[in-house]
Image (tube, rainbow, N blue to C red; front, side):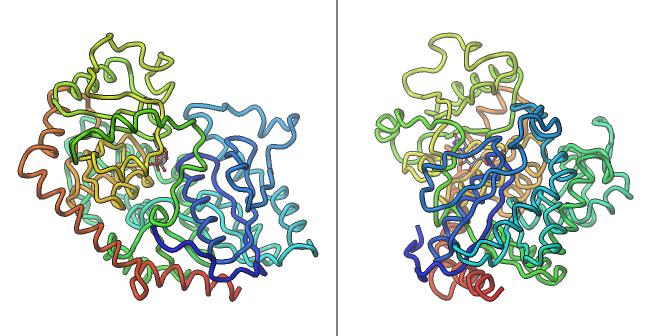
Length: 460
Ligand code: UDP
């Protein structure tokens, strides 16, 4: 990991960070907060009570819980705590959160006994915060927790809508058609993102996200220039707000902000496995499968003949608490199923030979950071774009998708773990990791990007 020694320790400037309260968004925001703290800034975190991280892991930050404090406020406090409906908070808080946030920011700005606030950094999906920050004259920077490529696709949503690519039926013959604007994508990738129009509820959120990100005072990306060279050039050319590309996992892990308890009991077993022999399987914090597909995945893993470490989140299998549908003895001594892991530590382990992933951006980038080749099974949203980019642009993974058949699964694992094809994919993953490591050295793109972010924020 990069040097984490504070370079300015007087902490005479303060930054307020406000993550979206979901695992894939909390982790990168708190990694960024740790990076900025290591550069000498004082840190205040605004957070909802919903999905609050364990604050005792961050004694160096000040936490302030906002928006859903009042149990009688029907707008915020009756929302589902789990499942896809828990994401309704994105709509509700964006629609109703402005006055409350303005009040909290006014309080922070007027504090005389704390360092002055330089800026607010919010998740890009908190688009309501731009006008609030403007109204209190506080610069707002955005943390975009997915790739530059994904942002460019979202920016083009109105065009893709006009061309009729959104909302096509599954059996439509155009699904294999390549998109003129993004030749690496097929219509089916756009369909997989899961919204039917650029003006439906999700399309509306994404349009607002794009608009208010472009209107911000700066964009921080959890990425690096060498990973998305072409997209970086396009973003710099087309967006006025300055961009800063920082690969967070190379500075801090997301472990301290885990919302689920991490199992570590499998490490002695993992330590005994030969190098590059184990397939690590995790589909992130939000996906679900039906029992039939779960069993197909289990059989595919067993039939591949490779040892595996499989994360099955409680509630991942629809209708089950955990792994009850599995018959005893199916998963032999050679493999492990766990509820949650310290994922970056697992990916950095020498025994891990491949990562079968849903391609959430954090998981994707964590794999890239450790040079681990991937088996790509995107479920929805930006995962479809991340997977396509990894398989067809960078060629560091085998695209499997999520139509679950045990033969295809065992086959994909063998292709990446055993075949010559896997050797080439592994080599490319290693080369990208080497480029990343070089980018972190003084004079390298990631190093310089972080330095410019620090100077920029200090100058605000
Ligand atoms: N994660 C983890 N342990 C696990 C599985 C996932 O710590 O067993 C972390 C992972 O390292 C990543 C985050 O959870 O930082 C998931 O974010 P991602 O963007 O990959 O997917 P999401 O959960 O948002 O779909």
